[in-house]
Amino acid sequence: DLVSLLRDCYISWPEQQIQQWVDYYYQQAFTKNLIKHQPEKFMSWFDWMGIQRHLKAIGIFSRLNIRDGKNTYLNDIPRTLNYVLSVAKKYPELAGFSQWLNQRVMPIYQHKITSALIQTTVASES
Image (tube, rainbow, N blue to C red; front, side):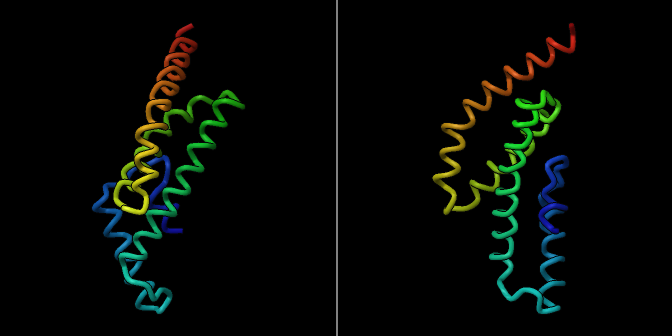
């Protein structure tokens, strides 16, 4: 689906390019009567679905590290979390969530990810 293609956890497309692709998709769907909502509503659904999927992916990446010892997935968390942070701040409805992420989650994340990456580096040098 569109969100999976354009908001992949492993690649960051330029925002302008994403917007062009979303606009094109929307116009095609609207022309074929597959969607009846305004472009702004469609874009908010696109963004919010992306947030939900990225939060889920962050949890999966964390679990893969903790449970399975697959610490290479930690490298994908910054890009994925950055997407959540940048999109959440665009929507007034997500202001509380954005504030919580920045004030509560980010300090813990910074500490944990830094510690995990240091341990990974030390282990690989041994």
